[in-house]
Image (cartoon, rainbow, N blue to C red; front, side, top):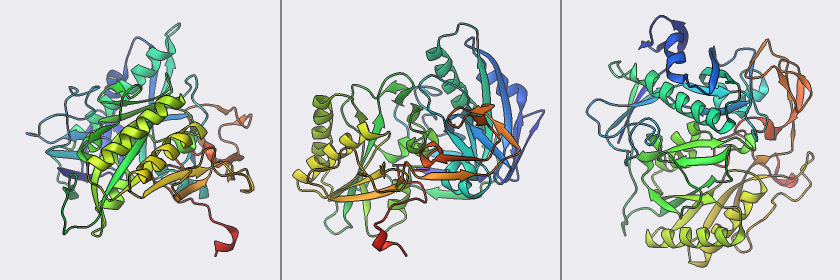
Amino acid sequence: MQRIVHDVRSVEFGEQTRFEGGHLCVARSEVTSLCSDPSLATVRASWVSPGESARIVGPLDAVEPRAKGRGSAGGVFPGFVAPALPGGAGATHVLRGSAVVVAGFLPRAQEAVIEMSGEAAALSPLAATHNLVIEFEPAPDAPWEEVEAALRRGALRLAAHLADAALDAEPDAIEELPGLAAPDPGGPPRAALVVNLQTQGAFKDVFVYGRSMAGALPTLIEPGELEDGAVVSGQYGHPGLKNPTYLHQNNPVIAALRARSDVALGALILCPEPVDQATKELVSAHAARLCRACGVDFAIVTKEGGGNADSDMALKMDMIEDLGMPAVGLFAEMSGPDGTGAPLVAPPARATAMVSTGNYDERIALERVERALGRERIALADADATAALELPTAVIYAALSPLGWGRLTCRELGQCA
């Protein structure tokens, strides 16, 4: 497939949504129309850009604006915006450097922050984008499940609408994106990417083609399907470990494999993260069998969530190794503020290749900011949302991303420079 890239360099509100010369103008009336729902009393839109003295408090999900090129089959966000049919072919337009971010309160949503300036800005991928922040108030007596579903639909419709504005614009780049590499005796080693998706019920769920992945067995898809938004987040726990829709659209492991010539992506496997041991073992066994059936040489395993998800990773890595393929896992550590505690809740028994994406418990100092969006207070610190704070890295949105985005890791003291 092709990725048609339009770089967003400046943003504003105006009378009509349009994109020209790197400038994205959005009509507030169109935002309200696309996000309106009986379960939402109000919807407010604000722009916040990289480097601003601003903080997004309570970010729930983030979506990169994308739309299918004219004449391309299928559509974006299948199951929500487009019909739930296989995507990943043709041309997809991307407004790179922008995101739609929903922020506010939902039950079971653990408190998160995105710093748009200061040293902590480097820790979240959404600090580097122009963010159209959607704040909301639920309608009186509206069930929270309906509020959450309305926010998801609105954010996805809005993201597709913004990208539609660029369909006739001159692109900044056209990127050819390969699909899965077929077995080739003379070719480079082929990797399987096993992506674990959080499936722990309402507000801690991930959707594939508009349906919860809970109860499913591992599924083989093409990387282009991720590009078109086949995987959408509805998971709001463990913000430092969260994989927002934005990161599924821009899967960092796939990007890293595409950038190399000495390895190729041979399989992309989506898996649920069940809560009971027997189902964890069943899913892990099927994931390992899919890796073997695809004839890959090794596997990379990612996850979403905290300690419970460690066991899903560990089981899959061990079972993949048992079938003769090396497996490497991306784990965030939970080793206490000083880093001396046990790093993993459930480490593999036999697999030994693990990459750290940082320490969940390490404390981070945040500077005072001029404005905050999403919430007026940070409950975890019992402080005003604009105040100078010290918080655990676990609160910084996607800072410990087990999908591989990020600038954090952990090393033995003797290995530090």
